[in-house]
Image (tube, rainbow, N blue to C red; front, top):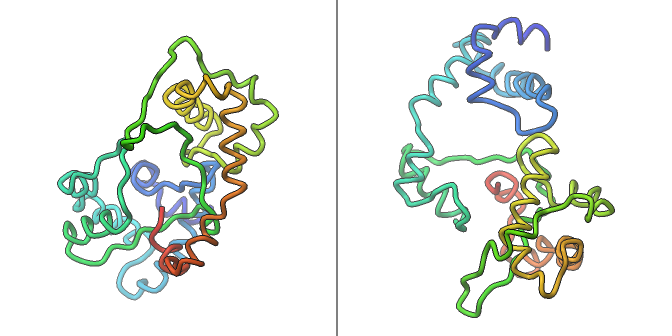
Length: 217
């Protein structure tokens, strides 16, 4: 591991920015790069050495602006919902070949994005009570389960706090006539425990594990 870091010393800044690990802690990134080199890079070493392998990947990244490709397809980083098929089709159209989207999170389960009340027409209220701020102390007994079941996909546990704050203030405050802050998060966790989405998809014949593990994120 130390050897690979020495070999890539001049690329380190760009690697940290453009080829990070999504695992925590950030020190895992060196293991991630080692894995990529040993699994894939060694199969190209007759053409390029270790340094050139990583440099070629970084150069390829510069040539392909995925955010712009998705933006053209009206897929934006917002609170909207976009199907995986639409994302994949947009990338294929933009780069000219089949894309492969991978996730290093547990592919055997779904996480929670949020819980919010909807109107009958499918729209929903938001930010209903600016005076009722998120208070971590009110859910202290739930934190352990929330870190596992309702985590932020960004590194640092403090980011999960920001994520939960956002969910409570945007959505939870709109259900406070029925659920207080503890009840809101506890209800979301309980609903998650009652619904096995992977089992439901398999039962409906809508689930291909190999496709899911390779493409869903």
